[in-house]
Amino acid sequence: MSTALSDVLVADDVRHASVEVEALTSAHPALDDDQWTAPVRAVCGLYREFGYELLLATATVETQPDLDAVLAAIDADQHAVVRLEADTDTLRTRIIEREPDGWPGLDELLAAAERLAPEIARLAGVALVLSTEREQPQAVAERIAGAFPDELRRGSLSPDRRRGR
Image 1 (tube, one colour):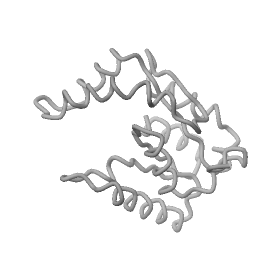
Image 2 (cartoon, helix red, strand yellow; image 1 turned 45 degrees about the horizontal axis):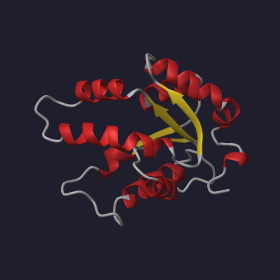
Image 3 (spheres, rainbow, N blue to C red; image 1 turned 90 degrees about the horizontal axis):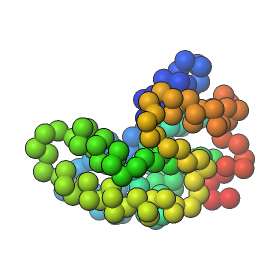
């Protein structure tokens, strides 16, 4: 989804950088709870130093503390959290299609997706919730961009979407 949204912004010549939290924090053994935000903070800080006011950060969070931690690590003056959702069967199919054959973590990931759906639905601070059911990534990306047209064109988000305020 982040690629599709980035493509929409590129087509509109909106200056931005994309950050995938999972890619920055992927390690074995896993980073400790007090470590995983450091790579996110460092990379987002570098993009700000390079003059990128708009960061598209994608993260799969499981709990409110996870969301709060990733927002703190991104350390933006303003933000908008978008939660994407789909039916359990659709999520299951997408996960199976995405992961490589024989991947040992598949069963655990499928169980987690089903178990976490209700908790993720209760996350606070979400500005927009969109269903991806029977939707192509490009269409969802256009809906996200359409929900924040002025903010995305300026490369930053409006004051009513400020972090923790």
